Length: 346
Image 1: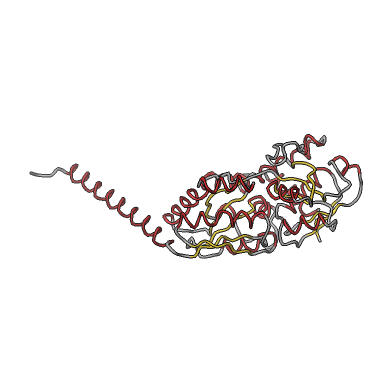
Image 2: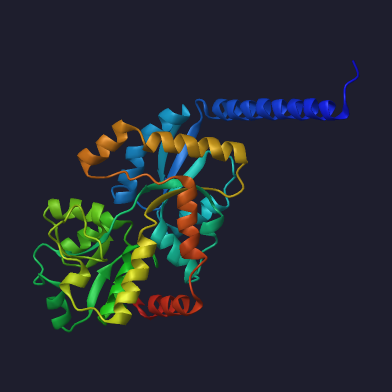
């Protein structure tokens, strides 16, 4: 029987598709074999004991189980996480190291063109979001200030503790001081939120701007007191605590600053790997991360320890990141740079 040209073409396409399927299977298998018994590093840009370190150590065993690998946490404090993120951005794209990043601090450091930033958050390999939560304004437990209004009424220079130039703690303080027209000095150099909050508890510093998960631990320990949630959404840890918009009459200009900062805060704790990973290995790693962070045992552990895991997949994380670092209007970017630059930092 003579085979028609059309039939030959169909058979050829079927063969090619079959080869493609076999290649995809081989690639998936090679990724699985690649990770088997390997050591994988989860980098944290802060010292031990802080919120990011605790989260990383909580999720590491579950990621290790999903990859069939040995996953360790490596602390690389410096410049509020910038030093570690620069290293990840230039690390080999082999999938053996990735980082739990403060999405807010990383995005604002890039947008405000901070000295030393050598990464592009939008070009990194996105693995997903571990959690996102509101941030909270804390003072010491024995502070004379019980409300934000009392702070505004007491005209003095307030000292805010932080680690790097833009680390969530520092830029949150800068935006708060600009939005409320407070006289502030933002003090850098603490290894992480744990040490920065302790400095406030010891009355070495006046205030700190911190995620509500960390704030919950500090308040429960009796070392700090919460004044307000710094956005329009209440914290699940502090349901009775007023938002800054409930506690004060915020000017339209101040509200715009708080709202933008809240949008950036919603990036949360994101997982990123070096850019340029092979697509099949990146897809495999993303799938493993999704399996690990959706593990019911991890979700239960997070609820028990109140370190909640609210997983968002890699693609939605990438789009959210780009919406902050790529879509910002020039006039707002200019204002942000001025705010960060105008806050006196020592």
